[in-house]
Length: 176
Image 1: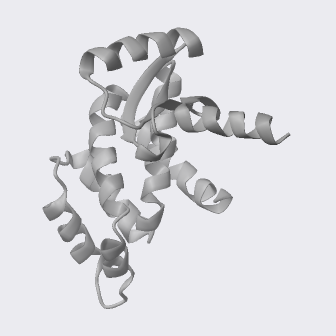
Image 2: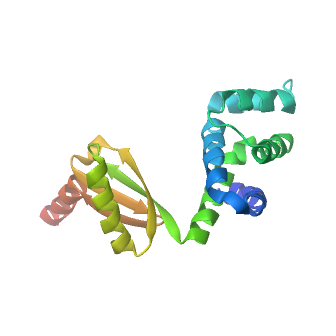
């Protein structure tokens, strides 16, 4: 993983500097490219020696859901021509980290056993921002195996208030 991070860093830094005027707009198309780059069929197609960089570029620009500005197209061409399409998800992760660092925010993933309504999510976000003392970009992922409650991951910090975690704690106390 360290190797991927090392390869991705110059691309992420260059993209961050080039997109400094509108980081939010760049983040949208970078996320879209990240999702596409994680597709194993696309990776296999791009890795085929009989396929040119132009063909890979045309395929991606034809499939991507968001309109790519000229800056995005140039970035994508560079990544493809340098054979770094597989590193694109890590580039996007590092770009997002730089963007968050500049804005003083962090990404937070809330794992929940059930869907969270918008009003409850807004309340939860406010509570988490107080708890973690920073602005959070919250996303929700469903994990039915939690049984109930939530598990929050912000960077390397984890706040686990799930029923599954409580049951595990009770199990350890009872078996000790």
